[in-house]
Structure formats: structure tokens, C-alpha cells
Length: 127
Image (cartoon, rainbow, N blue to C red; front, side):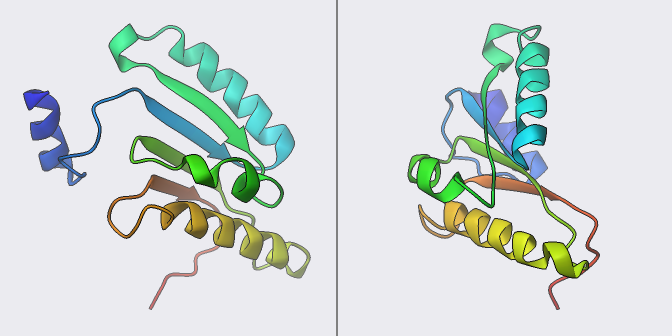
């Protein structure tokens, strides 16, 4: 536990987060999250027992809020595939995914929620 706390301090993560099995939540379209969930599960099956995590997935535009945000804990890592909102046809999908992820992030309070990694093509930055 002591080495994990030092590692968290050096990498800028929360020092007092839980020391339990982590959960990886994949937020993507239905086809993509199912493929990624199967790949990550098989990859993690090859890891050491203390380094493993559970893998779940949801569609950010459909069932994420209803089926998972009430389970948001500090041991959850969220990997989000953000639709490219520069295209008019998927701008509403980007807004839906962003709103769902924000709800999952702030359900436990600022600074204590899930850790989120967002991957997408839209170069917009908050000013």
C-alpha cells in the first residue's frame, strides 16, 4: 500500500483512493464497446491477480446514465470514445455522451468521482 501511495503521489493521482480491484468502463458505441470489452478482458486474463480489473461497457448515448452512473465509485476508470461533434450529423451524439460522462463524474462530488480518459478527434479545448 505504501508503494502504491508513493506512485500515486508521483503521477499526480489521488493518494487516498481505494486499494481495491479497479473497474474499467468503456463508453463507446454498442459494437465498439463489446469488441473492446472482449479484448480487454482477454488481455487482463493474462495479468497477475493483483494487477487485474473488471471490464464493463456501455453506450454513452443510450444506457450509460440509467445502468451505470449510480455505481460510480472512486475505483472506476472510464475510457470514453467521443464522437466527432464537428460533423452536424453526430453533434447531438457528442452532446449526449458528454452529458452522460459529466453526470457519472460528478455523482460522488468534485474531486472524489471516477477517473475519465477521453479520446476523440475534436480539437476543441476549454478556454
